[in-house]
Amino acid sequence: MKLILLGAPGSGKGTISEVLRDKLHLFHISPGELLREEVRKETTIGKEIAKYIEKGELVPNKFVVEMVRLEINSKKNFVLDGFPRSVEQAEEIKDIKVDAVISLEVPEEVVIERFSGRRTCPKCNAGYHIKYLPPKKEGICDKCGTKLIQRKDDNPATVKERFRVYYEETAPLVEYYAKKKLLHKVDASPAPERVEKSVLELVKKLKKTRKVKKRSPV
Ligand code: AP5
Image 1 (cartoon, rainbow, N blue to C red):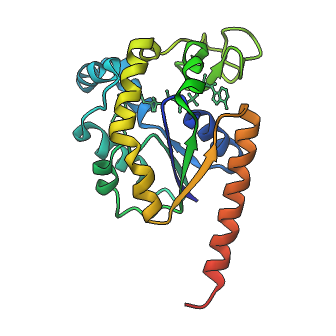
Image 2 (image 1 turned 90 degrees about the horizontal axis):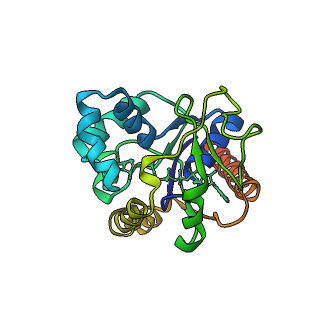
Image 3 (image 1 turned 60 degrees about the vertical axis):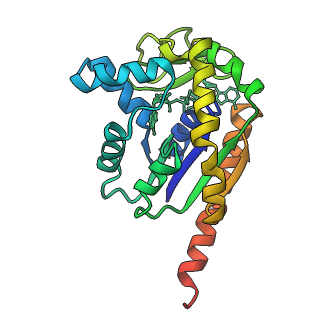
């Protein structure tokens, strides 16, 4: 399966991608994580892109598109988490055939409180929430035992800008992929386990449809 996950900041793209990786063995590609890794390593590119991430703006395509292409390269199964983020980026990868685009739908007022409680592992990138998805031991990653951190861009001013950019640049992709008959909407407001169940059921259905299509004569 080749999937794209669309959704506003905090809609749960990272959380659902981890589920798809762990349960369905899809390769998780997160440009957000790849970019933050460059920032952490303080590479020349990292220093340049940090300015955009800290302001909540999109990092210019010259840094992102090739990076994503290299990751996708020859992978048969993947979930793209947070790419494309504009119609321009979608056009850049239109030669890559995907099976479906899943849009995680959740109102801004529901996700806004997710940011203050989000905790992330700087080593293995696992995501948590102090109330909705707490780690077993407070402040420590379940998977690798590293101390969890809060993301720099989760402060209220940057979150506001990330939403502005989302409405302006990313939201038009819902219509873009609907026209291509690839779009599937999932309500991402309920608790994580319920969203997980909805997405897994949807992917199961998509797999079945794909098998039937492959079997039917052309
Ligand atoms: P990125 O890291 O992709 O951030 P984002 O899109 O703003 O999304 P988030 O990671 O904030 O949220 P999410 O939807 O993954 O939610 P999560 O699962 O963590 O990008 C960051 C920056 O990188 C961008 O601003 C930009 O600068 C740059 N960038 C990235 N991609 C780019 C691109 N293509 N082009 C240019 N620039 C790019 O969940 C959020 C919290 O809620 C967590 O704490 C989680 O535990 C909790 N949670 C999840 N689901 C639920 C639920 N159902 N109920 C309650 N809590 C939940």
